[in-house]
Length: 68
Image 1 (cartoon, rainbow, N blue to C red):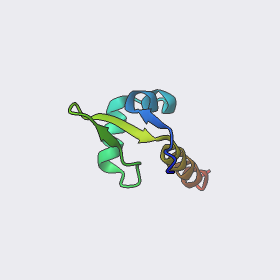
Image 2 (tube, one colour):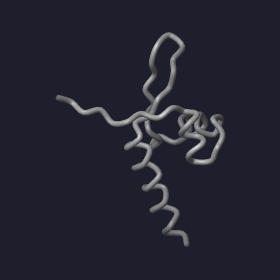
Image 3 (cartoon, rainbow, N blue to C red):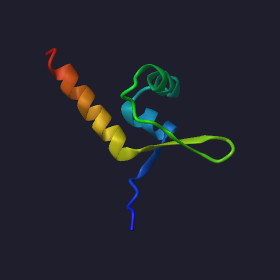
């Protein structure tokens, strides 16, 4: 059986990271390494896999740590 990762909404992702939803949308457009959202339903509700978001954040931290 396939196990699915926990998913997180765009709103919750923005809240956890501490940025606006508009910033998340901008990152989705400008940063090819940003996790790909999954869209559901006719309204296109957006979700992200939580483990992909965690990996993205950890990678960004590593990159910024090199500049300290």
